[in-house]
Picture 1: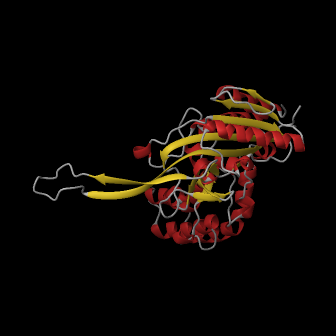
Picture 2: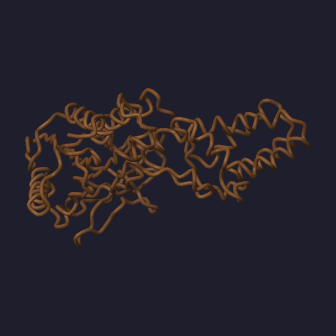
Picture 3: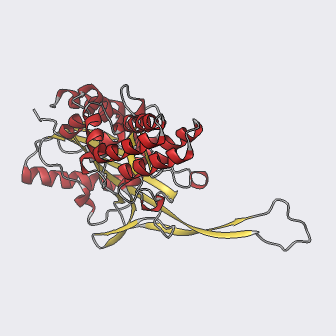
Length: 374
């Protein structure tokens, strides 16, 4: 019987003619691996789409989950603007804003350019807004004095609030972690670890030449297109890898095993069915996983990415065989201690893995997280 410390989720997704994740030059993100250039999808890209999707498996629809907002304008829009709308005197608003921006974003936070986009949960935002309203109800001199004292103890007050609140940073922070440079005690360890996805074969790309024709062009106008452009399109079969640390997840969820179970069940669905959303109108980049394996155990996780160090053929069959061979070698060398379930459109097999549909795979993962063993 395997203890369920770690849940490992491996997947293969195939995409034709897309530009899923771009770099600063507008080209597809890439990485060199095994001497071959691969197309890449960043973990940040995938996590954002998983957390903001409004599908039936949306994480924010879980009972008891709290939302979160990532922005450098949280204090401005959620705390200060409501004071202005309520008619708080401008001088008093300015005093409150200076103190609260620095408390949240650091000593230079009073200037927008110095703020990092920060993730705060709704409970934290509500606390800040209520404190701001409290000072807004005071005479100016009293508020100034109170704000000086509040600034000295703001970190301690926020810490006390977080300790008394369920999911103070929101479910997103509980899953994917949070780093707050202005307040290290507000940092949250990530319970879900996501690798950058990469193509199991060498990159496949081309430059797409396109034109735009003016619908109101007259016969006497210059012939031809009114705009000519160029963009990159790529095709690929991507290997994705995600790990859930059950112990950290339960810690971040204040021990709520039912919520942890539902999170993992939904996460399996999201990984399989939610695609990065770039260039929706011109490429329709929608696909489901062709292959997904979930492993449960208490040893340090290990990716199967090494199976694709030598690029394989750009087919799901070749990728499945490469993954199976590599996993077999790992089992022979290190022992087979993990429990496994496999979903495959082709009916492929993996060492020690029982076949399952996606709903069965997700339920199995959720049940194991609830029980703590497989």
